[in-house]
Length: 342
Image 1: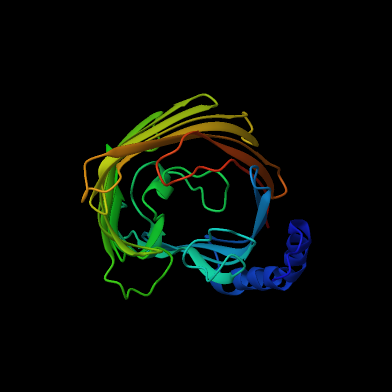
Image 2: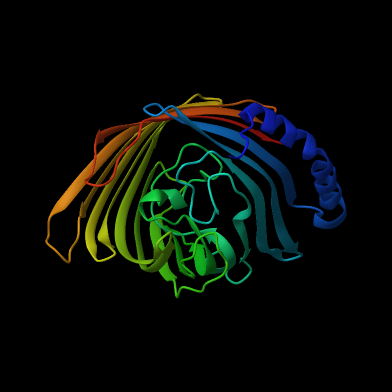
């Protein structure tokens, strides 16, 4: 049996071990990255408790975030983003399939790509590397490293390795991507692939709408799963309030599926405190080879996040079921996370 260490002990140790890395990154920024660059150390510790079984799972993360804009005398050439993270799991019952077990440690990449923007004043760009799949609400908002997640869990893939074209036009934004369908894994030995895209109104407006699609074979724990989906999303900003919704339909492993998501978020004028609640719904065929019988599930999520001016981020979230699908349980999970970015 592997020894379990308290969350805050591991987090404190991570802080001490990261000091040499912090010095190194500041030297790298000054000597190599130069102007128009940003380097941050990002570390967090999270505990998630199943309130029914009293099982406590931990996740500790230590990484570096590099952001560099390359420019010439005539304008910007492109943007490089590198985010390598070391993730340590402890006592996790159902870990992501990229981990060997619930106590594993792994180097992962959240984002690692270069977006070439010098072709047509930002209207036609080429992105190469590991980036978020252009689909739905999750594509518009950076939720990496936070407890608050949107709709990527419904398709089982958030970011992927590949190539995209993207840009901002006078009336709309777009990104169309061809990627491996392997998620965090850069190796593609299972013939996975994914074609995805989103076309939406300008994200700077108070009302934002989008049409998304994806089609391909996505790598999962049990092998490659065929998925096809289309989605509509809507975001509305009103002072400190944000209202978001997404609806999608399609097929997963041959079964018809439909998903719904809605969120209401309130944020203080200084944007240092956020409170949100979410509602999720899913309906899917049980087995299309046997019959057209379907089952549905739903649950709600409530969360809070506080960020101070010195890089600390404290958040908590609770998930509770409304209705369970056949052969699929929804456990009551309370999660708390402490995060620090230098």
